[in-house]
Length: 217
Length: 217
DNA sequence: AACACTTTTGTACTATAGGAAAAGTTTTCT
DNA sequence: AGAAAACTTTTCCTATAGTACAAAAGTGTT
Image (cartoon, rainbow over the protein chains, first blue to last red):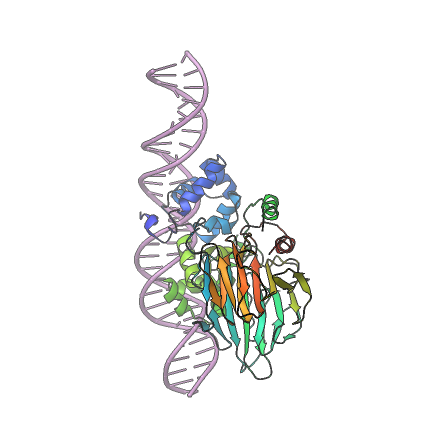
């Protein structure tokens, strides 16, 4: 059997197997106990922990539930990616086109900084867009945008169209289907900041809030 | 072949397949394009999208990379846990002053939406500021800002001053001491988006934001 | 209608999952 | 201590499920 350590199973020194084992050991559970909790066989668990197999999505979900961890956390292997070197980055006005669709041209901002959690970008909403309802998308996370030039209409599945002029802004749950339409026959530029879904980890929110409030600005 | 819709693949109405397809469609990609990007065969992708198979962990990782989404996000199927009542809000150009200091005037944007995780605001950096190094602050989280008018200099503890003109932007780890200075004797307006510390758990992002922004920033 | 393109459907192959036995480890008892 | 016992983990084998390749079906365009 192949050693999956050299396969894409490896992200940052940690493998899925080592993580599963660590989680199990943290609870002082045996393979049998996890087998009971997950419905997976002991042998399958053993192979997973030794990175001899690559479990299916369905089994990853059973694993996460049995190990009492969110699936999201389970599969996140590179948790400590902290690099001290890059803590700030700057983007200039004319930046590279990040992506282009019939509807939008997108310019990534501050893309060099990889550890950041927000994703800022400039979007040019093209005027010659046929039907508003065509491009409806929904994706995880939240987004905020601010109209730099022109005017747009925000269409969503739950709210009526809202017209935004230059200087206006909107914040929306992007799991709602939504799309933007440039108004008045002219392209519109918006500054958009997207934020991925919230981490589900078993974090101590109280102490974190306290730590924040005790900071001396 | 079994219909995995009845299997644990289903969490909240959404299946892995529907999500993969939505992600692909959001980019207007074909199966062939994703196949190229991921290394997976077209047929495998088709079956995954139709929930006919449960991809292995190794392939989930290739999928995430090809779809340009974190693995964590890819496997998080219950994205729409938000309340339907408030999932969007809009702010108009002339908004209320949120807070005023000798150095900044701050205008909160989209403040009505309480559950949001990012905190967008407009800051007017006042020109008549005595010494750059006086107002240095550091607080938790990350911040992104975009220069709307005028020019500013960003001073931080680790980097030399960086001058930003209108249209420029910066992203920084706000635990680094930092401050902004308006240049050329004129006030500068920036759009700022602040994001609290990483794993916030069930914390109320809005109130935390308020606490932090009310400090001596 | 012909064409190019995209997606789905078979078939062969390869990898994962489950059950049981073997190997390894710790505990218990004399 | 030593050995047996109980428990934990790994390995072997077979069945099942996922993947790749190729062909067929579906879709939209000229």
